[in-house]
Length: 286
Image (spheres, rainbow, N blue to C red):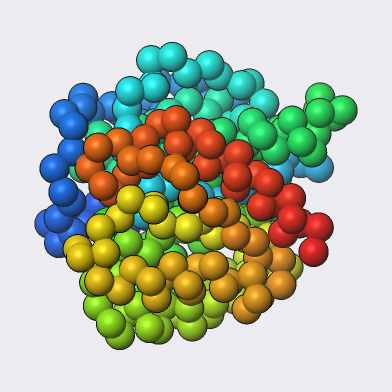
């Protein structure tokens, strides 16, 4: 346990450095004013997770749309005591947004908690002993190059995943990223190959060769003038289930932004979470 906490401290230091780098190199379009919110690490009491066989753990990976930027729903959220998240101190807490530590910008509603609630209803409605654990790893504004094996965010995610696996079973991963790779032809044209290899490495490093993974599509509201290679990344994400077994795709059709043509609004994140859950069930059934 002491070693795990040391690893966790190192990973969170890496994530903190990543956030500072992201804020200086990845400019975001203007967004509605919002009040910064502290992470759940200091706002939710630590809880004891259930028995290992009943604790199903999912990784949340990617950039700001996995984090969530719309804060308008935070005051009305209702906790589910069977949905936990791993805080920055390597402790499990009842999941309450914001669950991600991307504090350079206001952190709001992401798809993770709605995903977990839907999975409990769909897969474990007759098993009250079942819990879901979320491991937030996403960092806003980050390109795929920082998520490949050997890069800072990939390695930090592996450390967090292994720490979480001491309590339960790594059951799947959600991926939402790609906006940062749509402004360069080479990055966009190699995106599918690089992402496929990253998923292979993730499975190997976690010793889960058939780990179910769901990739989410980028927002339909993104401006193709600002993101000139959007089509290539769209196609890469949609094609991932044909590249690897146990990978599924969550469509973003019809979802709306919070007014900045970049980030999903809170209502859309809740809907997207349900779509991730439906896709995850497909990935797990393959």
